[in-house]
Length: 214
Image 1 (cartoon, rainbow, N blue to C red):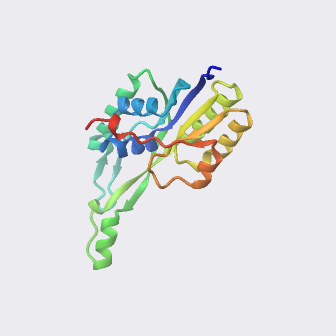
Image 2: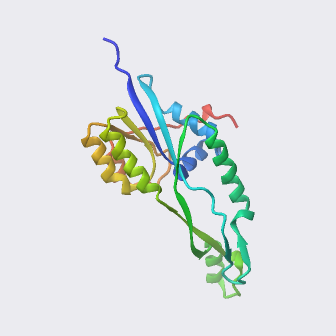
Image 3: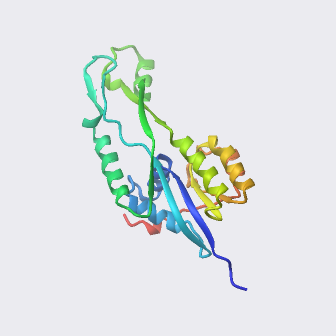
């Protein structure tokens, strides 16, 4: 008797997925490396039908620094252009469909190194003691809605999630109730809650550093 081919779709929390693949390649991954990671995660009896990548464009606002009040342009920072080039490459990669959220500025927080310094003794604060708080919006909601939609329509037999967001547990339970299998891939990221993993049908270990040459 021949094995039945199972169709799968990837649901990729962009920020978390980059961290998982970063652990394998040792640097900020390219979309091509993330595609290769996804393809390495399926079995011989599975066929990929889609891969949705959820992320936010880099923030391009200007805000006053917390101490001096001088203008701080996010667009002038190296992190902005790294994210911009990554997403430009992602849009050109036909393996992914790109689902766009929004990145918001939510103030400044003191860096851990600055906190340690101040515990050792008082000193004047400077702008370099702080880092921006950036918050993703709409990403988790879009992921949850798409999990529900894909399972309601039986688009695929299995959803493969790369995420650490335990807020998705209700959507995962709905998918399984609709008859869609759910696999989660976490890499070696320790922040993933056990209850999120246990809610899925399967926790698949994918760690093939040999696939990614330095």
